[in-house]
Image 1 (cartoon, helix red, strand yellow):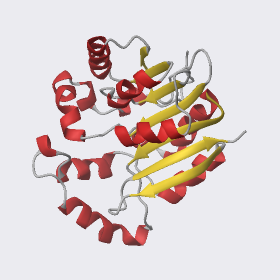
Image 2 (cartoon, rainbow, N blue to C red):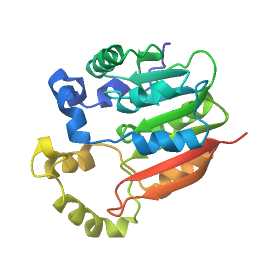
Image 3 (cartoon, rainbow, N blue to C red):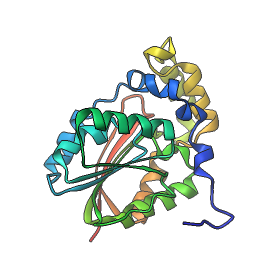
Length: 234
């Protein structure tokens, strides 16, 4: 689908490292994401063998692959060819036949078929400025059925501007010492300077504005990371 000239190039905002096959091969160890709690939560909310799940920004497919045995259809969406090649390899190795892989992003994925019952996204929205976050969240709402569920994790700042130094310095002080052990102080500082994490009170206003009800939100103690469960209003 063609886009107007004023549309952002989300592929340019993906981060060069995500396009590197060598980085992709080590990503899971670095990210240390456990899909179990989110999968259990979505199952409590009705995820089942007939469900359509879209994983936007699927990365190496940790969540998509964990959810696939419990779904009718899983669509793993990412801008990175290297990430998607990894998802394909893992799906084949696991014998999963209901996982579709689509190279696209939050602003370019065009959902086909029955509306999604669930959309999952983790650490993706912060790649977009707030104006484009609104458009991305509206597109997510549009692909969901009425009462469909969005489960979202991201770096979100749950504090006021006057508190920034009080919050950031303890967070940065507890960063990993080496890249292979987790996210380092240098990586976090690069994120703050060059990416688009926003305040929770701004993000939540956008979420509600595009047609979601926030059913649950949890902010990590460091106040720089949050998880949301949102339901599309009928």
